[in-house]
Image 1 (tube, each protein chain N blue to C red):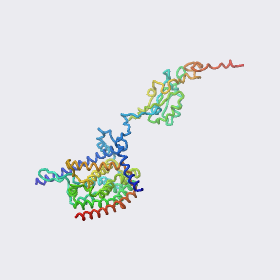
Image 2: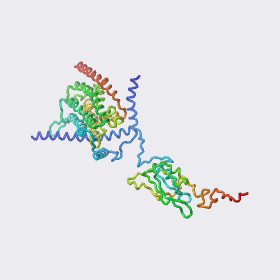
Image 3: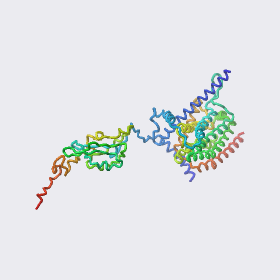
Image 4: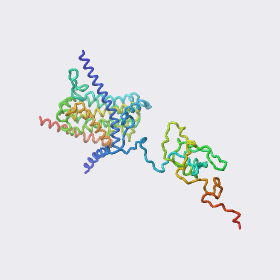
Length: 330
Length: 176
């Protein structure tokens, strides 16, 4: 009985830990992005609220919470209200299968630092992350606005174009690790991370992840300059905030996934595993921000061309080559 | 060639942004640092005095006529010695667009612009400036001009005695 209670408490503790850390990171990623983008454009970025602008996320939250929660006339009310939640929740859900540290010894038992170590973790990630597009599409459709609708449609077709290569680029990883479990995948990279063993898969996965996070150069559903804000044009207050937070949670989650699949997860010399994981995730997030500062938005047809004519064949060939090499090595 | 240009075009921006990150931002941190404003910057209006310390404004209404947003109003009166002046003079800075047309219309150089642009406030009525708010104790950008000391104006001194003025011709003296 007490055994079960301890297990339950541990799971609850891990949930709270993940929830707190991910939300905290998402909030401060917003600030970090604004600061880094600012410096890259010869500006300072936010530096007024608190020392170095460190209280800016708090100020943003207060602002968003006190704004009017507006529902446009003739919007599909329920879908409109639910859509931001879908984005944020699906982004958080993916974190359930991400192992963020080597197993710990607590109360004399092995505690894996992952909420659930699913033996089909990769499939779970692919499934849940595909659900995330519903937030964009339903939000865009329910707003009853042409800009939002265009954003939603773009989000959907963009998802169709890159999700295939996203899944296919993970097949070599699974072949090399011989497991669908994310923990096993990290374990398999103890000596060499997969980014060195299979850089092509890493490249394809990274590009697809950029598209998955709806960020520049693939932020077609948002496209401030053409669509006013795309799927979230009509949103205000905390519902817009949820979309926003969802995007940054997504950044953290996708950064963790890149870390888990290709950068060797928590493996690393000298430093404790948790720190290594955090460091790698932050490095990937910094890369996202750097890319946002440097690249223009792809055109609609360019995205399709990239997804269907380059990434898809590339990942297919990569699977064949990886399979042949693995067979050759025995 | 096409491919090489494409690859260069993809990776060069990363170098540019990285380099910019380590350069000093060009931002002027406004309330603490102030921008060096141009000499002829147009902002808050003032009513200047002539070198003798008297008001320059003769309440001719030309500024309020020139004002495109009708933010200047006044009441003209005349003193015992024949000097015209404004009984009250009001500029509504909530409407003023700082175009400076009033200063160009002013024949006595009374109304002038200053570089003080920090006029923001929460109370609109506080931005309605009365004569005592507008009147300053200096000559503005011209230290010598005194309208009443110009030729042909016999208020500060009788006609013909102003500096640089010849006495009026005796019409009868000219008769043959």
